[in-house]
Image (cartoon, rainbow, N blue to C red):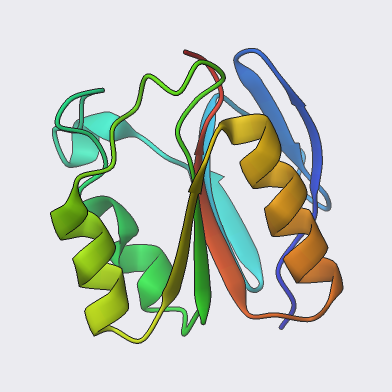
Length: 122
């Protein structure tokens, strides 16, 4: 299974190739994608992305995780979250969302088992 390309990104909207859904925030992994609903884990901009937000993607066997912090990088990523990924042998990239999507797509095009979580607003 290859990681799906993120076909488009604009403020508050993301499209994943092969999927008819328009996402605000999304999770992607080899062979799939879905809405990233912060309410499932009680996530807020601060303290930010929690290991619980990433577990579903980690379970897909990704080797690299790309985290998009938002257009203005308002979404925080605590050190504990980065450590969680590293302990699982996963390389992690934390970037502004436009840069994160570009990096994710480049890795996916190279055939890397890459996953990501992306915040498309602030």
